[in-house]
Length: 116
Length: 115
Image (cartoon, rainbow over all chains, first blue to last red; front, side, top):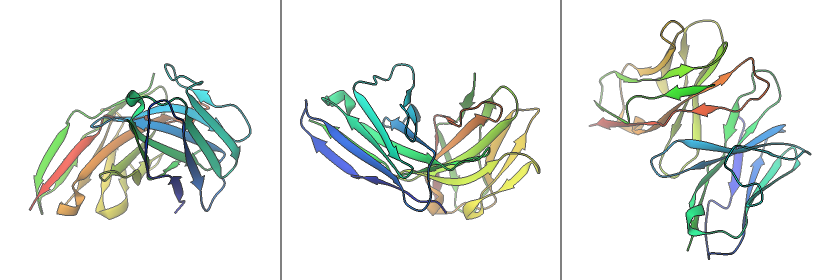
């Protein structure tokens, strides 16, 4: 099946710094990538949808200037958490979608971000 | 608007017994339904999906789900639970008619299989 990787798997940073998370589709070209956030014991919350070569579409309530998304190629999307604060600590999961009408999403293993 | 409800936060079942994890959905038009499983500190793993056709869908690891249009349900089932099935299960829906392919997730159900 289609494989999606994320790097890093976990990161600890100081408040005020920026953190970049990479999402790669390893064996397929992803026309669309999604970024989710998951709080403890809660469901996945869609943050944004990104299509290769175009600006990401952010969900209501998600600050686009804080969560910068770049989808530079069909196999790579990055999420940068700028000026991170402790409340940004969360589990971030990306998914990638193959083209087609019934395109399903393949999920990465997630990145645990802890902001001190 | 699309939404998914998983009415049970926690399901406990004895090993070897059948298990059911419930899911109901609300969507405009025909639904595209999924079940995913999540192990601790891991991403989501795909179990099965329903697009059209046979209402009983078979998926990975012996799981199956039954699409019931009249009850707008898509319950996950397995005839005989294993301890290794203990995990967090998410139901998700997408409306086929919309142009977007983003999924709406339920809040998850934690399944614990007791040895």
